[in-house]
Length: 52
Image (cartoon, rainbow, N blue to C red; front, side, top):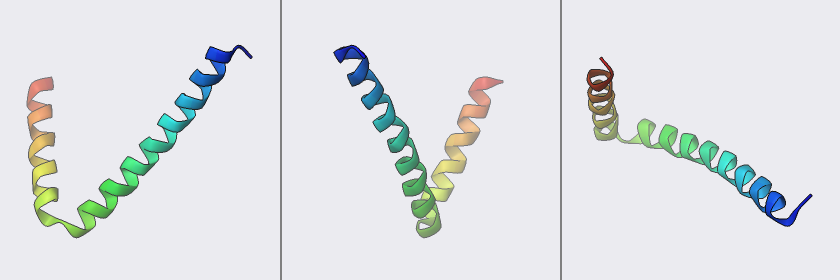
């Protein structure tokens, strides 16, 4: 495998792992922070409106 392809493979793997960390952090945050739940719902509505 070429050097740059190896680097690309490693970075993509790290990025996939970080997506999992984001989900885990968001899950914890939503369980502990009611204000965050409200903000997320507000943001979802804004996105829905933009996509209509």
